[in-house]
Every structure is written in C-alpha cells, then in structure tokens.
Image (tube, rainbow, N blue to C red; front, side, top):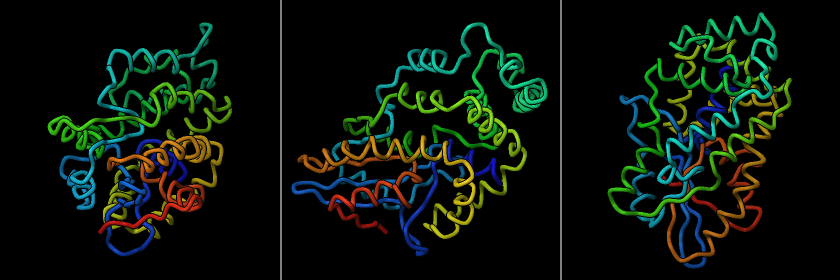
Length: 289
C-alpha cells in the first residue's frame, strides 16, 4: 500500500468530504461581498467515470472566474516542456544509473518498458521525474486521462463561456517542490512508485468510489497511514503549498466576484488542510450536496 498512497498523493491529491454522507467535494465560503467555492479535484479520470458530482455545476454556474493550482488556460505546451526539462534533468552529465544504483535502475527501466517508454529515455532524468513519468503512464494505461479530469472539464466550459482563469502557482513552482526533495527522499519516492505500479487497478476504483460518495472515513483508511510514512513528501506537496495558497484565497474572499477555486482534494481537509486554515481565520465553509 505504501506506493499506492504515494502515487495518489502525487497524481490525484484525493480526499473527499468531511462526513460519510453522500455530498459533493465542494464548499462555499462567504466573503463580505462574494462567495468563493473551494472544490476538491481529481486531476485524471477515466472517460466512463468523468461525470462530476453535482456541486461542481452549481459552483461553476455561480462563479465569474475559475482558479486552479496552475492556470491551465494560459499554459503554453512548449514552455511547459522546457520547464520540465530544466527542472527534471540531472546535471553535470550524471546518469540515473549512477544516482539510483544498478538494481534500482534496472527496475525503473523494466517498469518504463512495461508502460511503453524506452528505458534509456530515463538515463538523464532525476529520480522524482522518473517516478512522475511512470505514474502518469501507468494511469494512462489504465484509461485515466487528464482531458477528462476535473480541471480540464471546467476549463473547456470556462473557455466556451468566456470566463477568466487564474492560477495559485506556476508549473516551475510545482517542479521546485520535487526538486527540493533530498536525494534520499527522491529515491524513496521512486522506490514507492516502483513497488506498486502493478497493483493500481483495484485500489484506484476503491479510492474513486470513496471520493464520489464523499466517504472521508474510507479515504482516510486507505491513505492516512501511508502519508504518515513519508512526511517529507506530504509536507512538501500538501502542507507547504496550502500555506502558500491561503493568503491568495483570502484575497479572493475580499473581492466582489464569485470564484471557483479547484485544487487537489487532499489539500482541503485534515490537519493543515485549506478548510481548517480558513476556519482558523474566521472563514466558515459550507459543503454543497
């Protein structure tokens, strides 16, 4: 289970609702002159399971702006590729085999081949980048598609409706999170992904079902222990980014227009979650059905 939880943490950021009752992973927070809707996303979905919980439609219809982790509406593909290459490559002619060791390199190469990626294409990538690539390709193999994910669905609607979009951080900011992991943490991340690549299907469906029905207790049972087993990754990917995003969301609450803010749903709840941080500052949230 260690790898599965790590993979969900990175790729999907899943956690559903605060109660076991069926509800949408969307909350309304009232400002003095507006409402900010805070929604939990799954960044990748299979086409057959792409329908969003009803709260998303309600929040989107009542919002003038769509705010995402990254402003996907303004993300240039060529620029994004350059950012990935800049941050995810090994420097100074170092190879993955040297950094990871022969045994781990052999496992990574075999895993890459299994998901259709030439093993030698990983030779000059950092361990964290290899882990992300393997994760993405495994989900693609299982039919998970970012074009069916929550953000892309909402982005297509926003473009059609001429609604503005914004981001809480840049792609470079996200890459910095992984790049800042210690060498040992990067290798541990890669090991966790490699350990679990072949056991994704059943766990994936269990997590999806819990997210859709808002079963926080089930999601916590699936994930919480594993998060605690890798606090460095959890803190960097979730806690630190939440603290960075909080003042931006609170600025939106001081505005005049309604906004829909969509982030990986794991960012919303639990200790250090955005809902808790907002409540500490006097901003109560009401969950939508």
